[in-house]
Image 1 (cartoon, rainbow, N blue to C red):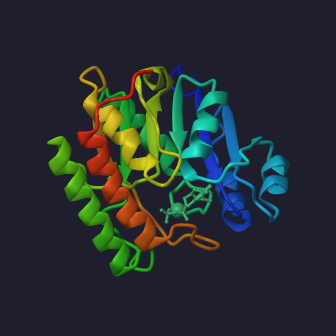
Image 2: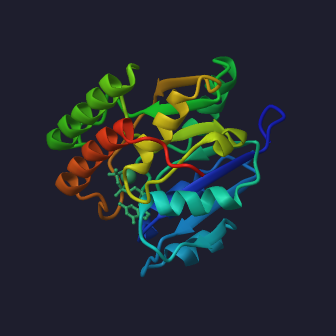
Image 3: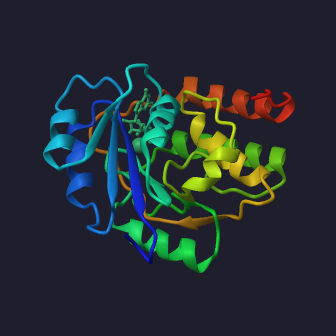
Length: 228
Ligand SMILES: Nc1nc2c(ncn2[C@@H]2O[C@H](COP(=O)(O)OP(=O)(O)O)[C@@H](O)[C@H]2O)c(=O)[nH]1
Ligand SMILES: [Mg+2]
């Protein structure tokens, strides 16, 4: 419970035995529900998550977006906080983000990894790719977003019912921000956090995911919404 609100943290994991241990070790005590979505790990990810008392949920179909949608369906908190299982996003920043979320009176707060202070945290290629995707998203949606690919967000769970989240892949991170930005009733803000080098092996495929995410932005912008 934080400021009278119950908090759910969701962490998607695909073989993150090193990172998840550090993330869970640093999880603030005020978090009411910690959900680890195991996306078919073959290492000790699930064992470690259970050992720390996290709620372990399995998603057998691979995909970052797919994992999040499964996690959302099990979330009970008033406010949802997300981060990777690789210990690149700081769990210590959760209280800082929740404080900013309240202070800024927003419904969706995205944590930007920029400016990057740890120069080993992201390669030049990744920085450039991130910039291209963020400029593209900002131009398509008429709103400056510095980090369209950030995986750390804080939002009111109630806004999920107004979102159309179709992506099962890495494009999910831009899609959820677009859905927040497009909704006039959802107040959106971005704030900077400290991003550091991930532990374990990277799951992102920079060229494939980068081009796909660019294509996804354009497709989502120009195709009419599917009826639900
Ligand atoms: N790329 C990818 N990540 C997944 C998947 N399932 C869960 N994840 C987790 O999603 C997070 C993001 O992946 P990561 O390799 O860190 O990408 P990056 O942070 O964009 O460099 C990590 O915690 C992964 O373990 C999946 O199918 N694909
Ligand atoms: Mg990561």
